[in-house]
Image (cartoon, rainbow, N blue to C red; front, side):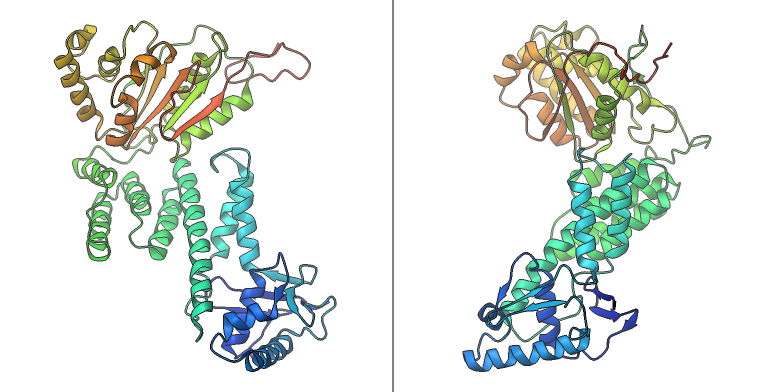
Length: 466
């Protein structure tokens, strides 16, 4: 049985039994093929196809042109001899046959991206299946859909532009996610390649420039990282007339000032960062799946605020501590180079005490004893001081036991956590509460009570099974 392979990501190509097909010279034939391949879910009526490809011609002429383009297309792809046929044809409609022996790169690409996005967790890191999907998608996406192709039909060109942009965004998402994965493993060269490909596809994509800068800095190539920032600043100015985002500028300052240095273990540039995590008094038992989910969320760049929600006594605090403990290891410190800090909110009586508590935990001077929160003026000043203190930091804050302060926080015009996340792009918050914080961008993990041990009891990190 002959195998047809169609590649539309990049310059369009066809091969039949691995032999290139070169006799499909009609632009309208290529346009017809691409439209059918992107509308496999239902038959395409002939009048729709003629309106798309020959919008300015009389119906009779347009239908005749469609028949001619169809004859040329079927001859080129060997459809007359294919079993089953590649195209399902009737007097009123045409449709690509999903049962035919045909491989299409675009279909394989979208299937890989969808499989990763539809997986049960939010991030592709630490999941072998998702990484395989992401690598497949990255390999399949040679360039934008039908790169360099155009046809003399405004409706088709508009349709092609829309489809091209949708696939383009999927490719950027997959490449960024894959780059984040390589970065988390310390494979900075692969992370750089993913960032480079994103920038080639979309030169003004700042998150790709940041990924590139960060990976260069982490390999000790400081001058190259600074040059990449200048390239980002230049393209943003020329193409969009804007300056880089504060997150990009903050990363640039850290690299320039030497605080975003190479973080490889054993390197003379590696410096252990401060942490503020209470030591565990007992072994951590069970909840392996939940612990894995929390850690994956914390490694997800799009998750800036993660709240563990559950009733009192369900173990939220211990889960938060166990999930973050690995992040202070030598292998993980590059993720939060400015530290991981635990702040207990249980003793606090008002939301005004939150800023001094965070400041004291993170080493902000003048916050010992929370004295600065005793007056309204002092509270506002300390709040602003804290925001400035966190501005250029890459750190994780574990804010434990929020529930009794939420009513007080809601009464404030600008909740502190939301403002911290807005002005300090390198700060991530892991909160525990009996109820959600109801802040923009909040991700939730539900924590229930512990199950009784049984034959299927799953022991977690730090536990010893007897």
